[in-house]
Image 1: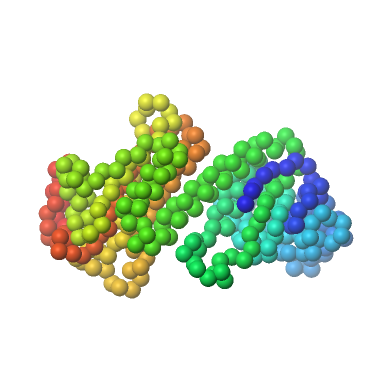
Image 2: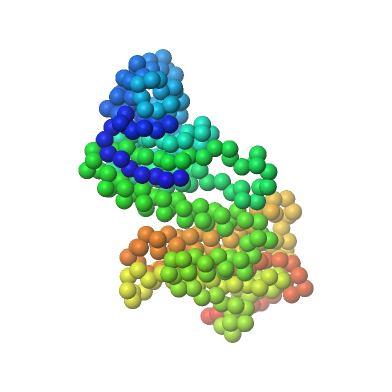
Length: 344
């Protein structure tokens, strides 16, 4: 899906689907009013009848008629005038994106006049782009039946700014929003993989691949090195698993030689509870115990893509926590790197 910005009015755009914004007070801004006029007042009639309320997240689809360069018009409710925030814009745009996909909306032009006025064009572009990328996310790579995959896609989205001078700022926001959305989805992909396909070894390989693509420094501390460093607390979790632990360290240097900010994320790729095993019900969800690691790896990737002026280190200790002959037992005493003793 391509997301771009165009200046001018929405009625000058040729698209399969127009999207216009409406507040809950029923008053139409210039873009929505222009579309409404070309539709013979359909929108205002539905507002007067109480069919369109303008509440935030409300999505109503109407035929465009013959006077517009579109097949359909989607009216997006954005709530109260004083209630437009980045969070509310993201939430309703995510809902909008999914509805547009279900409609097989094809090419889409969105008049973002109201959101842009409330948030400024860069913030509005960022929020809308991030929400569209995240809202359309699906994890279906392992589905082998065609009917399990979405039947429709959105081809292209054009965000329409009425003032040409606002296009540059909105474009900058969109570029950032796409990166943030894509890296959030990157973390989701890591999290959603089944545990047999996202072992510590695979996590480390994915981190190395990301580092190679974005120019990050990457080091993987293997078991032997962890033992030499006396990482007893970390290794006590890994001891019950046949999968080798991988301690991932990624570094991004965007601000010279300054000290980095450290992001640390838990990377238990499957957590049975070890010897103190968890109940079987919902244990499959324990594949998600590496979500912290996925988040910090994705975060440093986003910072690198954004070329942020900051130094950051992402630390992701990855291992399984499994029962086994070598598993740590309740009551055992282990030692952390700093020599602190820990009774399990």
